[in-house]
Amino acid sequence: MKEKILIVEDEKDIVKMLDYNLKKEGFRIFSVHDGEDAIDSANKEQPDLIILDLMLPGIDGLEVCKSLKNSNKTASIPIIMLTAKSQESDKVIGLELGADDYVTKPFSPRELIARIKAVLRRMKEKDRLPEVLKIGDLTIDFSKISVAIKGKPIELTSKEFELLKTLLNAKGRVLSRDYLLDNIWGFDHAMEIQTRTVDVHIQTLRKKLKNESKRIITVKNYGYRFEHED
Image 1 (cartoon, rainbow, N blue to C red):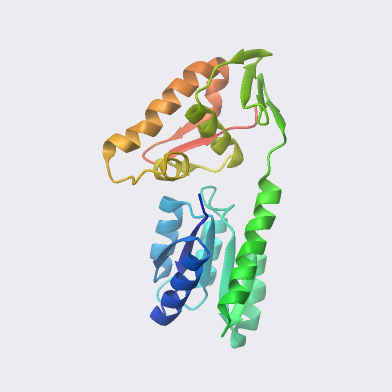
Image 2: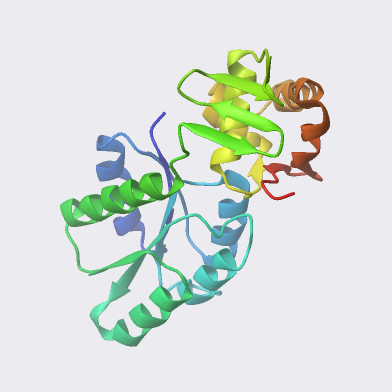
């Protein structure tokens, strides 16, 4: 499934241009127009990347960047800032706060798309799990799609394995139920019964992981994360 991008921009013409060009590249796009909604949407939707304008009504882009990078739920989401030439000092501050790249207005869609792809490529390289991962008594072999506890194989369904892999890939970051539904099942998550799908699979996965099930942490009213450390 193609990456999901959050556009945070209050200029409608720019949003329209970005929406059109990024969708042409196959990205899934959603947008908000102020800083408060940006923080809320990033937490709820867990996008793969955020395009963040620095000049926003209310909470400005730098404050949004700082807030997102200081939260465990959103710290690992890459951010590309949109800046004006007059905001040279803000670029430096944004990068120091944890933004991954910036593009100066006016910009061409081709330049931004190239930067988006480069940032996502770097993130995939950084987040790539080893072929065989050992955590506590767990051994996960991604090439063989197999899991063992103390060397003894356990049987997981394809969805259970994908769920475990997705939680592991997040490296401790909290993933919402909506994010898990979207990325593993591809559901439209409007229905409560579909949200329960995640909880049921987590429950059966925990049973199969036995003592290692303690590593799957429930975050009340939000979702789940996987604890790598003992």
